[in-house]
Amino acid sequence: MGMKEQVAALLAEIEAIRKNSRHGAESVRLIAVSKTQPPETVQEAIASGLWDFGENRVQEIQEKYAFFEKNPNWHLIGHLQTNKVKYIIDKVKMIHSLDSLRLAAEIEKRAAAAKSVMPVLVQVNIADEESKFGLAKEMVPDFLRALAEYPHLSVEGLMTIGPFVSDSEEIRWVFREMRELKEQLHRLALPHVKMRELSMGMSNDYRIAVEEGATMVRVGTAIFGARRKI
Image (cartoon, rainbow, N blue to C red; front, side):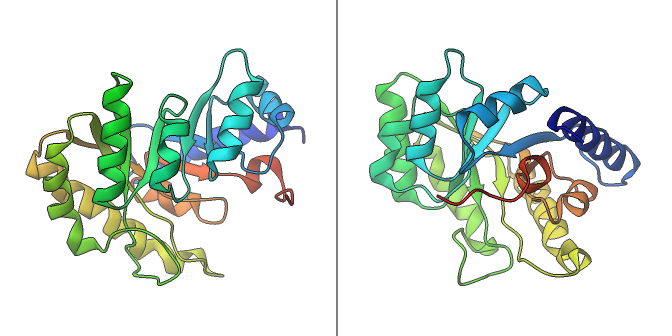
């Protein structure tokens, strides 16, 4: 199966799961995780019908951005250091990994200078894993209240990276709690907080994420195959 057929099958599967799930979102956007993939492969993915791509490293976004005459939507999905914000503020469609007020202040400063508003997702470490970035669940409401000071940030929703487990059913509770948290936060009606998006689910668990209300899934291996080493 070529990439075009693979993408079509994946999109059809996601849509079928969404429609048949009690908690399925109104729509699900497929973010193709293109980290370590060369620009030519991204180009092939664009030709296959994809337009949203997730990158972990600022340097890779810069390199790929320079390759395209018309860039697709780039999403920064990895941990972002404050000193790297200036390099991507004019290049990315969304930052999925906001996890500190220090980072929020830097994004605010750079977005204000660019006369733009940066869509962001707040990263939540819902499973409280020491190896993962993100805020603890109970910290999120006060964090969002503090973001009212930053008019050049638009909080579109939440993101999480689920634990890696052999049986994907074991992760369902993580995605369910994320959906419930999103609904609770939406009811707070905070300034600059839209709480429309829920970015969760990767190649090994996107099906359950979609069943539990994901609006974005970040899939790499199921599109591009095994990750290239860099």
